[in-house]
Length: 180
Image 1 (cartoon, rainbow, N blue to C red):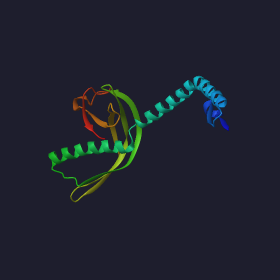
Image 2 (cartoon, rainbow, N blue to C red):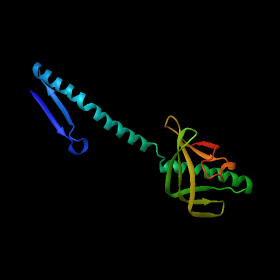
Image 3 (cartoon, helix red, strand yellow):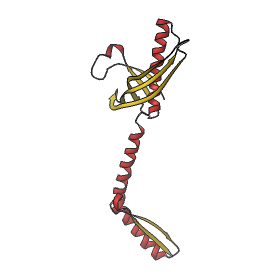
């Protein structure tokens, strides 16, 4: 008994048939089907592989975008540094900083030191608490640089050196902080 199912994906694959078959013990039928399958694969495998490769490439590039959670962590690192500076200079002791309402306006791809990076801009709200006071700052703008590492598993926050902040192009020297 031979079952041959031919399905056509008219709109997606431009009538590339997908073949599913099962065969019992009939050797002549097996040989006929095997030769058909081999010729089918020779003709249609390269276009199918090209479509799969394009789909994989598209999916992998999406995975390399910084997520809102990653951006929040990067902003938290910057806030922690600012908090430490204020603690040292003004003897202020923040008890709690809380980010809310992250709004990402732009994620601009670029290359920094031969690795892919993003300049991310937007705004957020922050709630802070000192010993006796509480304050909220709404729509505080941010402009950060995030870089994915070679393995694609970790991200770093890049902060331009203070001497480079006034340049209009991408700064040349960076301080780097591991995020994830």
